[in-house]
Length: 146
Image (cartoon, rainbow, N blue to C red; front, top):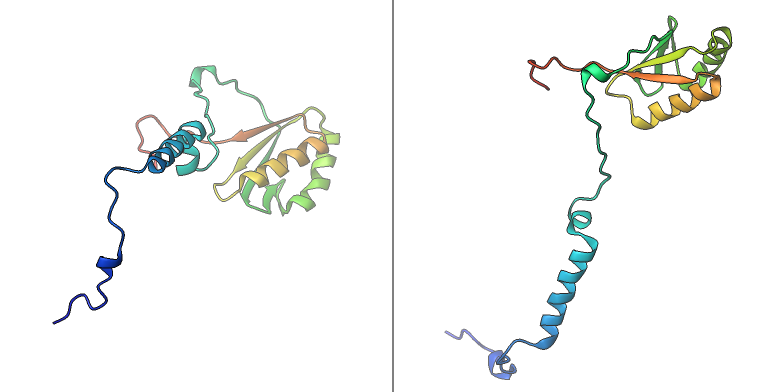
């Protein structure tokens, strides 16, 4: 049985006796680039957000005069009605004119995107609200988090 019909091994050049200088330069450049750029950018792309640690005793309680429940993107509950962000603009402007200096409390569901909250904040600021409070429930210290 013929296992090497073309005899390619005899036509190959002999392996080098020592490691090539160019290979060491390549390894050195790769290590240098990972060191300069940082492998965290290559291996885990994303935006790091440092969350502040807030002690419960230091949280200032702010009285709010109007509450908006944000269920999903473009499903906003306000003053007994369900609105989109475009429809809500007129109602917010009239409320801000009627009650100047009021604080807007937003209770957002987890289905609401961050962009939708930012759009609501920009719309509330242009409607005349000076402050917006994002409401949230903190779990009890003894309860397990989901």
